[in-house]
Image (spheres, rainbow, N blue to C red):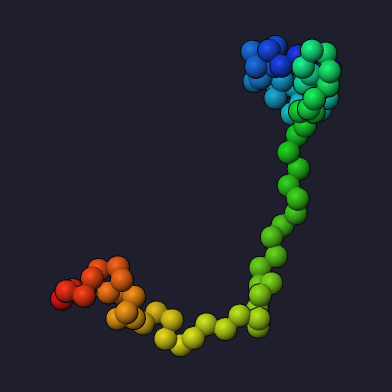
Length: 78
């Protein structure tokens, strides 16, 4: 099905439902096909742990740094 942009804007919900049920929808401008409305297909599952062993976090990572605190809060903090 080829549909012009103005009609697609008016009937977007109906078009999405049609795509959900397997219909092919092509959106056109001045009867020139511009875009396909297709159902979303995830690219794949994320793989956790890709940087394991490649990144080291120092032991004092969560310790406060006086110089950084002074940059944010000024030197007159209590």
